[in-house]
Length: 461
Length: 64
Image 1 (tube, helix red, strand yellow):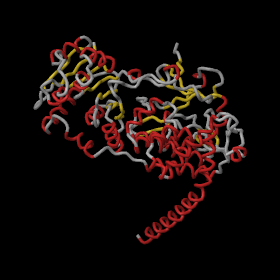
Image 2 (tube, chains in turn green, red; image 1 turned 120 degrees about the vertical axis):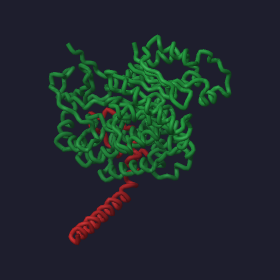
Image 3 (cartoon, chains in turn orange, brown; image 1 turned 135 degrees about the horizontal axis):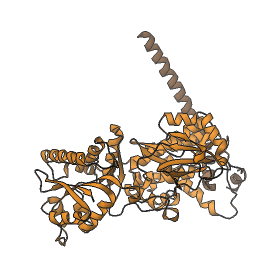
Image 4 (spheres, one colour; image 1 turned 135 degrees about the vertical axis):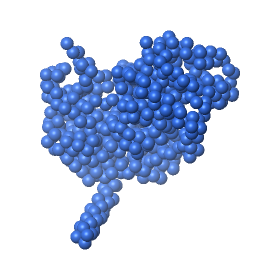
């Protein structure tokens, strides 16, 4: 008998919930949502959003699949190959997710509906583009009602984007601390005063934050529904869209340039490395066709895995590298690479209610294949992680591991050791091979021509 | 503020599970008033431009 498991990320909205049964994701739609569900379908909005690739497609499932009483329908949404979270997205990923939310809200209003929430967690990435995944986020629009999700949109999208663009891109990490978005009073305090001269940021962050001060004041009249004409609502949405569209972030030119030049490879050695990595990918035969490219930099090797048919998560802690990788994926319509901001020395933990609402990075694995290219010295020497612990981590991540070992003779390692004592006696090829042998079988190993580095292919025992 | 608050009616959708926040509602009402006129002008202007663009396109198609 198949056991259905209700997902911990889906409990707030009484309209329905997500559950997993037999490894398949379903969404149960409950009776309170009946009228809105009919309207979503009959208004043509559902078909329009799915046809345009803005909303995840679904198939109807038998009502007998429902896991609790009160269901009016069960649907089976198209699977998302890897669930990611806003605190793992680069600036442009979050911006595209914001603009998608606005685009959907405009279409919804045109069809007599409105988004009842504007959570960044309603967006995932599929085939290289953001897509809305919460089919139950729509309610019938009532003329005169304001947008109940306006505050949420500003916290989840506008505030972090403004902070990343106008203060420091690392402030996107605040979304990990504040799961319901960056509090507007905090954003207003952190933003430079010059942002008060920008009408959009002045209105939607600074004035908005000030207006929220009264929320907790005793005696404040509850304002469940301020009067807002349809034109006023459209004007508000239009202003939000313009404000988001106006925000931009570009790493300094020198940082961009480093991704092309700051390697230990000349063109011939790089070509040899690419050839070897492609051959090792070809020799890997995991059942799970996903690849985690750990320390992917700008994702150029992720593309090799993608070309070999792997859905590849290009992880890097460098915001500029992930931004560059995403812009490349978007520009080239690459559908099998998802760049994400991941600090392997402190990967995303379990977060939210009961520590179970958002999965940790490792809970979203394992992958079939892990790439660890020009990474191990950063973990072993840059972060003092002993080689056996790195090997254990690899064993949790992937069935197959392609690892480039960077020895002490390499100038990148010399740079890491320049300002510290070398306490890493066991950091050499033999030490690495011994550490990996506890969990892995060595399938292949070759020196990378023109370098002192060595490439390995392992399979987990 | 009190004056504005008192004209606000209650009775939002029963499924609105989010707390929209009083401040967020008030700001919307105020902003909408300020933005509406410019928005209407903008949409009318876009309508006129697209009409001319369509006219020019049709004209060129006929010539072609």
